[in-house]
Each structure stands twice: as C-alpha cells, then as structure tokens.
Length: 121
Image (cartoon, rainbow, N blue to C red):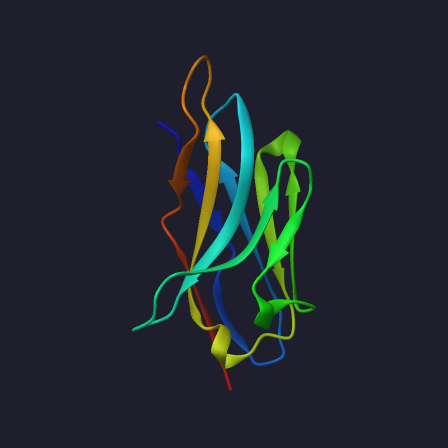
C-alpha cells in the first residue's frame, strides 16, 4: 500500500513562509511526476505546482515567483516552499504522485491526506 505522508502546514501571517513536505511511504519502481494541489472552501481543487521526473516544473499563475517545488529523489520526497504568503493561499494542500510501484504495475495516481495552510491578514 502506497501512502503519501505530508507535513508542514499551519497558521502563518501574510507575508510569511511555510514549507510543505510529502514522502512516499514505501519503496517504489519509479516516479513519473509529483505535485501539490489545493482546495479552498467552496472551490474546486486546483494544481499549485508540479515536478516531473526530469526536473521540469510547472506553476499555477498566482504562485509563480512565490512558491518553489523541488524533489529529493533519494528520499522519494517532494517539497513546496511557499514565500510571501497571502490570505488567498489559505486552503487544504494535497500532495499528488503518479508512479509505478514495481514489476508490470500500471502508472497510478496517489493522494496525500491533505494539510491545512491558513494565512491570516
């Protein structure tokens, strides 16, 4: 059973910083991509940032120049450094991974349990 274990959420004032971490709980064959999504109350879940196995990154427009996604392949961990946080960034943040568990397993998407990020004005 693959689990994505998230940490790093919390309460911060506007302009502050947080770093989210997400680690894959077991040894796997390979990762295609990992990313962070967020969902604010009453809104749809949206992609915040993603990183592919080759290192290519992609960001939602409103977080460019403020958030940075990175990965440590040896630790099967992805990070999201969030700077200059705004109240509009308040949401539950979910880690996402597209990976192969091993053998002839298909490419499968997994989700973390979510971590709350609250930015006060």
